[in-house]
Each structure stands twice: as structure tokens, then as C-alpha cells.
Image (cartoon, rainbow, N blue to C red; front, side, top):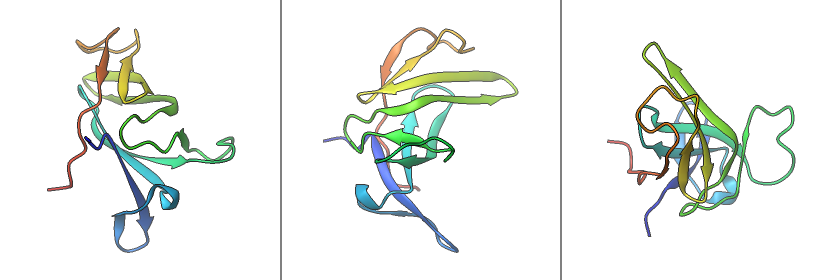
Length: 111
């Protein structure tokens, strides 16, 4: 099966290290469109209130994250909901995928 969400943990002085889902402090996704590869802080259990983290269902093949993911740069705005392994691009996106739901790209190991 394709890996659509890669669990990683942030290790001081070493950066992001692959880990088991239950040990993850972050998850790496490869969102189609201008956002591309992102590593986001996550929690799997408990409440995310006040943590600055996204809640993640723990699935590497059909990830769901909350809240929405918003990335911006000088030339784009990308705003999506990640549901069951797909990015639902919201109407406030500034790119060609606005209003579409597109499967996430596979997360390859860093080059």
C-alpha cells in the first residue's frame, strides 16, 4: 500500500526521524498542488486545544487531519481539508485545484 502519511518524531539535534504511529510527534504529507511536502505537528489521542497541533487519525494509507491545512506564499494560497487520504481544496484556494478533491501523493523518503 502507498504511504500517504509518514509518522515521524522530532529528535533534538537530529531532526525528524521515522517512527511508529504511536510515537509520532509529527506527520509528513505530500499534498498535490503548490503546498507539496509538509511536516505538521500532530496528536493522535486527546484534545488538540491549546497544542497548536493537528489531530490525526493515525492512518498512513487514509489519513484524516483536523483542522484544515492552510499554506500561503507570495504567489498562492492553498487551503484544504485532509479526509481519508485525499485533499479537498477549499474555494479560497488561488490555484487550479480549487473546489476539487484529489488523492494525496505518496510520501517518499527524503532525497
